[in-house]
Length: 353
Image (cartoon, rainbow, N blue to C red; front, side):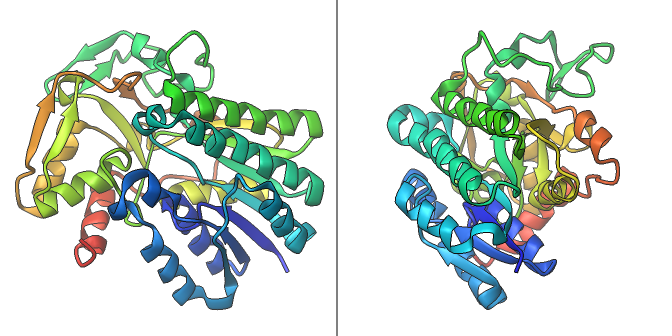
């Protein structure tokens, strides 16, 4: 039996991974204890997604309501499946830099200590398995804000002759900048994943995502940009835009496209890789542009207000350069842009909202 182990398996990327690999005939073992509800409230619960996966895939999906910080529980789980594990996709995290400042110990133990526990269990029980970590562009801290940006009518941009016009690549430093406590805990995890690759010659990769999105996202005010924005537009919930005149830019990648990138890496893995991954130049938008698209799709205005103060350490402009990953895996390509993503979020969540 070939097993894919997915942490955060009821979340956005975790559940997409479950579906993707079940459809390819793998048995998937999922770990998810719905901490997202503890972080962001009842509206962010992932239980609906867990139940849907169990109903659809039956015995092919084995769910564990465990905490990745629990070393004893993780050791028992890895001992149970041992060398049948072919791939670990680690998506479990505390994902908000605002929330991290409220409880730094929980943030760090989930993001850093939890990752260390999983890496060490992989080394002890299935060292030949591929280990994929959902990292974040926040490992670069606010260094992107030092770029020479140009203010346009509805977005910030960078000059076409700038080396990063096609997106920020992995050469950007992660040092000498403000990360937020969330960013710091993810840096710790990111470096651990790289080090287990280099030091123990394990097949590891850090995928440093921009905005990860899709219809399975349990979007909340502190995390889940496009999902929560569309939910607020549909339901009339007030929405707040923080700083940068609402012109801050993010690239957005659909969960399917990201998991498909994981699959390409799994088929031909490398050691201690880092990849900036996201929508790149093909799929990005500013806050103002996203609001306009949500209003057009939902055919109603968003009830939103602007606050001058931005979130500490937040990016003004982020578009990731996908060149490194595409050079290693030229058969992979994006299949969704922002309009398609928003239409899918809208159509697949109306009944749930």
